[in-house]
Length: 322
Picture (spheres, rainbow, N blue to C red):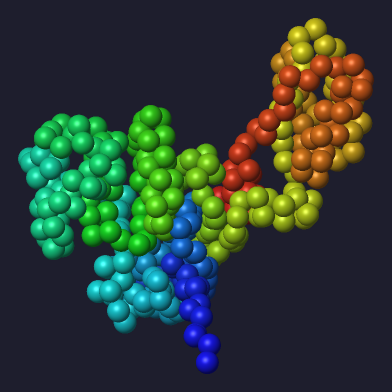
């Protein structure tokens, strides 16, 4: 008799099925469904009033859904909220801190509150790289440093899933980069990161998948490049900026680009630079460069005028608020 072969756990880290939330006559979220796999950095995006924060509050067991189900690692947020809270680390936007104590005291207080041994605090401090802040008063920290301390706090009980609402809000560029790198490291260590943000360029660099909401409805979900390919198949136009060598003839370059199949709306921006809209993805860009080189025009570079995530967001949302 052969031994039974154990099957890998295929339960999603987060599973949202037909979620709806109504407050009186106001429909905040309507029939929302998506899954988040283990170890992903999942971007949750939408205009103000789209329903992001409402969804996050259901995920973090702060609200019960009007309809539908939400599960974290197979545990229902409505019927097993205590277990869900042990599985998640939730950091709300603009979370407050106790300012008249040191960073070390702040983390020791919360470690005691959740029953975590003191030695765990040292490990979390090392993981989040806030060792130099241990003996500083919380009130003396910058916004970026406070955000790292808050992230250290939610990591104390070693949650499997991190739910972060605008963790880079109001941070300076260096603090944003440090926060982004830290989230990537956490995902590499097996954490699932559910990340809401308005900073699309930051999300584009770290997210494995995104969900885009508008007026409480899901309008796109999946890997950014897959959504982009789908839109290009639906006659979506991307835009790019072309830089040619100094001394090249701008008019000749403009004519060559305009004559390339899939190119639209060629506009000289300034000497040596052209902007153009195109369809067909990288194949069209390659055709543009080949045509310019064949025509004797030196090409310095071509780059999208917006990141792919920004293009996706602008294409699938109408900019309307509820």
